[in-house]
Image (tube, rainbow, N blue to C red; front, side):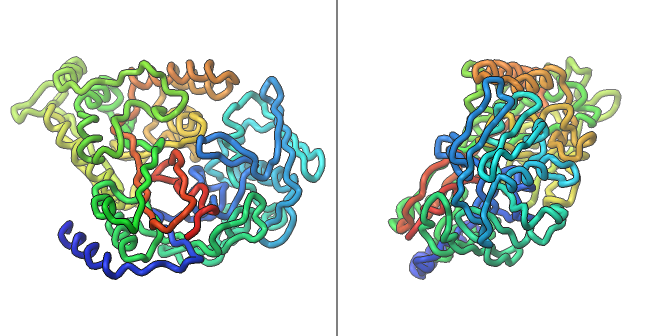
Length: 511
């Protein structure tokens, strides 16, 4: 396969034909089902092109003015007053106003909307329109992540106030205030956009933009070499095809994206935390980061390593096979004649699921299987398409999470008991993890104002995770953005899950 790819890339080099100068064509790994910010927790590329938030995050992940030109926050953190821009038009020519903000937040927190971002707005107590371009938002309790939450796109009231957001045709034909206007969507292939000539922040540098769906990194590499696309994230193993090619530039992007093995605590074996601790000790994470990620990543120990909330003195569970086996014996397991652990005549074995569309997760599952076998634990790797199984019901799952926004965003939803997916359909706690110390730390961190105070609570949270692990954290990923050397304006950004965010300033890109 690699030899075939090398030949394809070789010939593609000589067939390189540039994309149109006024059009950007960008390869993206996946496409959303709805181009609607209510259903886009990670602010995927298509949603971020069409919609604007009250604030936008800069290259240092600090909130900057967008639809709001200024704001103030009361000392108790309960009242936010936003002064809105008066020169913003929706893509259909209607004027944006405070009524759109009020409508959007009410929709996000409405349980009937089934918004994936509901948890960021559940503490909103009141919304008062002070005038057409000024709004006051009152919270029930302090929520310092609220400004980050307001980077989510605002929806047009005049188009949606009488619609069911779950099924609205708007989701397939969106209208926003962002830098690009939706043009056409050919499912499974591409989404095309045209520049918003009335964009309020700047002149959009390119007239057209196409997001091309390319789930296979090998195909993306071929399309880059052949001049079919201008930019895409590329697997580090393929970078050698671009490193010495003057037609391309490579930007290494940091991310908050990690991979881990999620334990399902409904599994009888995983109810004993000593089993989960043993499996954590059985894996050489640093070796995985060095060899499998080709240096584009590092060992993962907890979910906040690329956040200001990360404690500096944290040390995760060391790679120690002897300690792993000791913990299993302490849990009452003994080795059978075949060299595998069992208890009460039942073998310690479980299934590990991974998405077939993600070669890295499949590879990681195979590596974990081999590492576990070394200490006498049998596993079965099951590879299936996303959506073909309920990940809240399988023994374990190769999961990925991570947000560069406030640390609350991908901790509370994932680890708090209240977010157990069996109890809360919008929760992301698919492994049914429950820990009182974790719950207490996350709630205090979520509702305390001082950053240092919050950092202390997150340190407590991380220590509790280490002692009672819901996951086997494996590695954080860095991403390689490969783009045409003629492309100007590309800037780095801390990326989210699956590299979301590399197009954060795409309105500045031009050839």
